[in-house]
Image (cartoon, rainbow, N blue to C red):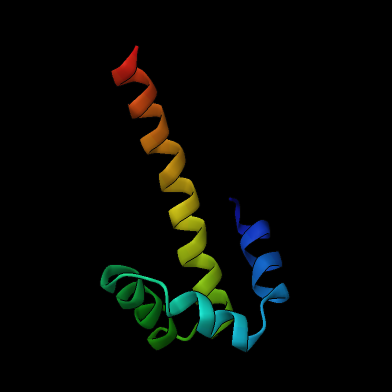
Amino acid sequence: MNTQEIFNLANELTEQEVNNIVATWNTKEVNQFNSLISLGDSKELSCATVIAEKYNDKGVSDIYRIAYES
C-alpha cells in the first residue's frame, strides 16, 4: 500500500470499525497503533497504517515462502 491508499482507507473507516479491528490484533500491533496515536495520528489513520504494514509485510513473507519452496 502506498501513502495515498493508506489515507483513502483511513477516510473510509468508522470509529466502530477501528475498534472492531484493533480488538483482533496482537500486542505488537496494538502497541504500534497506540504509538501512532500518541504521535498525533487519528485512530483511523493509525489503524490504516498498521493494516498497511501488515499488508506490505505479507507480500515480503510470501516472496520468501515461494523462494524457499522453489
